[in-house]
Image (cartoon, rainbow, N blue to C red; front, top):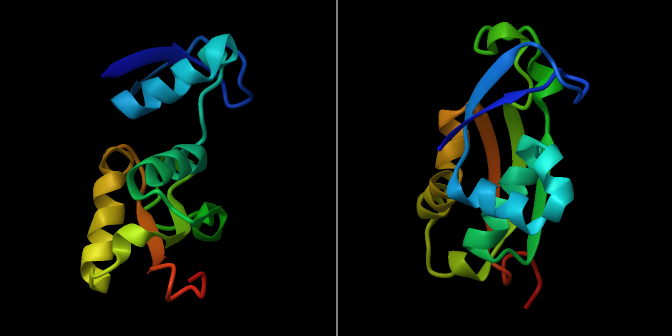
Length: 134
């Protein structure tokens, strides 16, 4: 679903229209936020957390935006922000899965983000046992 909205970087109305693709999950998150959610655009970090928590039922979930470390990088177009993240996920859904399959699970959960400007992820994906939680 594509939604047009008018916002400046400070969150106030702007005369510049942006078009952005939102997933159904994004819209459900907004709906559950109540009337306040109608005026708030979630950060990419918040969306990543929400999507990973929903799909992987994480016991531990850490999302760190490290985009500032890549400012001016050739792959970062038009001074884009929220492009590079470190993610640590501990989930029982990783039991019996090799590292490649765990990473695929994370990438699959974030497919919409990867199509809309997320450029790079550093992923640590562990089972609860590997993380010392069992």
